[in-house]
Length: 109
Length: 116
Image (cartoon, rainbow over all chains, first blue to last red; front, side):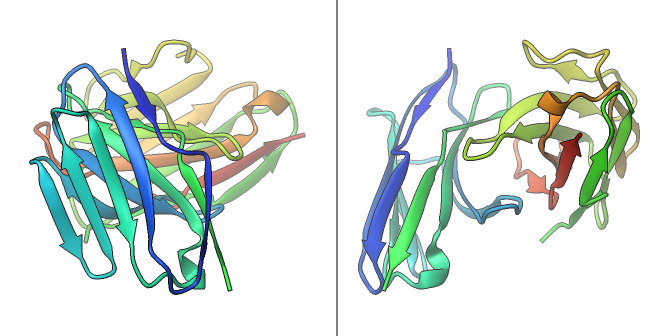
């Protein structure tokens, strides 16, 4: 079966760093995506990891450990506009995306 | 990046009516399009996968006679919610991919359906 877990909600302070974790158990693995979604809008692509290690892109970084079935999204220098839901999605062996429940991040002044 | 549009962005309809939602890939040919449904404060749930020129593949629990999907061309897929009921009220999002092998899915802006 498919099981992707991430925390439901997180709160952080403007300017701080926050790490959003995602653990997965899926039938096959062909990469992991992180998306950002503001309320009432479609998801927007943030990062993609298929090999173990850290991918850095500006203020956002994503890490993957395939052996542990684990990924995290790291957001640095948080801004108020980063308040959104962050979705972890696994591309399985059939090239289909399975989404986790999403983590609602609230950034406070 | 690739652009995917959806129309309408919002629709309100009476119970028992049918609603058609269009998903278009504007600057690429989409071999595969996906339809997702998202209830408030929940994540995206895949409803069906449609490949151009063939029947859609529905996920378990999704009624194919209620959610009709047509992928008539490489740039257009439609989802028709037939005999809509209030419990069908949701955010419907399509995505498109240009190959059958792995590559990124590009998401449309979503359609907010409210059934009265």
